[in-house]
Image: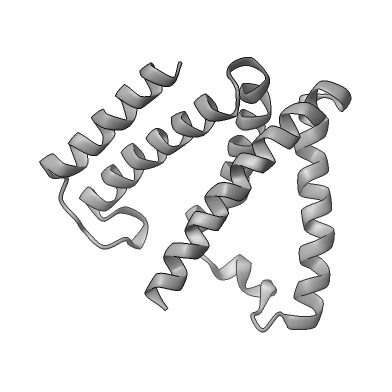
Length: 142
């Protein structure tokens, strides 16, 4: 199952690059905010149908969840809209490398302090080297 998870994550990363390129172009045609709205509208319809047939949880329990855990939807809008805005200006590659750097840095901070229920994992020199390498890659690709 572990290797399947790695492959799934690689697939998700590839899909995000396609999505960034597609939505960068769509944003030029229909507008950036409209593109972001389109993404969430279509995603809601598709996921709603999947949820109706396969959902096993209790969506009504969302009111009982910790309030901070509901911020994921807001952050999803910020994430996607930022990509739609960035891709036409700097390209898919630069945008995705910058996104990955942001993810690496924030995940290191979250895990270092054990925030949001994550396992505490100290920042070490290897992680710092990985981030520095990605920043160098961003500079070289740009």
